[in-house]
Amino acid sequence: MLRADKNALICDLAETYHIFDYKQLPPSQVAIFAIGLRDNSRIKMKLSGSKVPPDICLLAGIFDRLNVLLWSKTKDAEKGRNRPKPLLSVLYEEQKDTDISAYSSGEDFLKEREKLLEKAGRR
Image 1: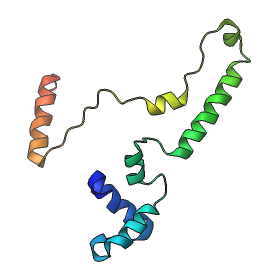
Image 2 (image 1 turned 180 degrees about the horizontal axis):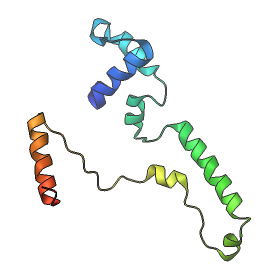
Image 3 (image 1 turned 45 degrees about the vertical axis):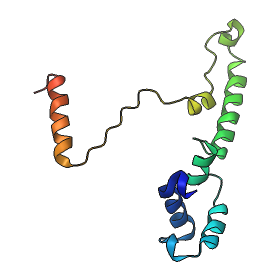
Image 4 (image 1 turned 60 degrees about the vertical axis):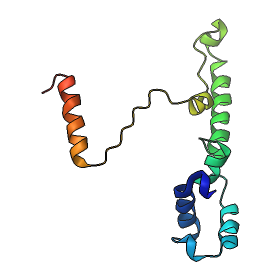
């Protein structure tokens, strides 16, 4: 778990067990605590590859079924149009166009900001 995401495990141990320095404990005890974390903890979600907690998936599935049931009683359903998009598919879609930047200092951020403002024609 430490190799997968050390920060996620540290956050989960602190949140769940109030363990702020896991290195003070024997490794076997830390392992027991790690195994006991809930299924929607950061580290377990990362290890399982889930982006959405199981309870949210269940609720989204219920919502989708109810939405289709309600839609099936409409005139749109009779004509086969405007079928509601499933929420589950929206939750599991890969996020495209992620434009995340990190800066090592405030000056770097301000320089990049100026470049973007000049490019947009605001300066």
